[in-house]
Length: 206
Image 1: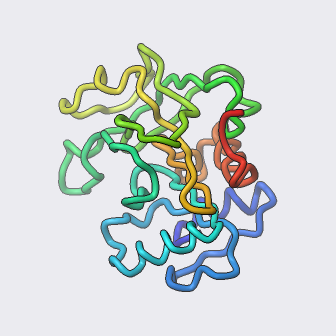
Image 2: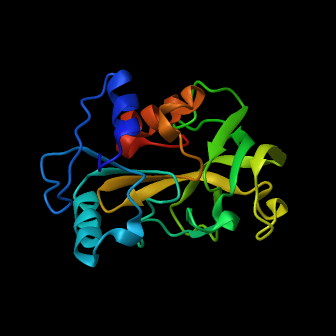
């Protein structure tokens, strides 16, 4: 994993041998990369290319929330509020949301047909291309609590995919809209992160 302390704590608590790495150009020897609080906008073109090349050779990539989507890995359009900015109150969008889990998904296995997820900021996916599968969607009336900026309105996310997965070369990619291990405080969704790691290139719906 890259940088985030709370996620490392969660993964180690779940029994994973989680190591923080700082050089994304040296991924050989690692099976899984979880990226979260390190905003992808801050990664160099070379770092993003290194991640894509590593996944293509069989790596398992998990984006733990909307700061971790690597362009080109999955054929989706990402939608959502602005990236969090401490100086911009309109960016504080967050949501505790009713989330429907797709039957047969290995990523949502063991969590029943629906549950609550936390997103900061919320993100959802449209325009899914070939080979991209849906593991979870927001319910029709999903917003349980939170602070949501005026644009885009919550209605735009209703019923939309919020967890998706697919293959990239010989590797696998899972994109989470909600953050399963946000600040190590969302115990009820830790299993989503664990499932995405454990299923690897067999992830998703069968």
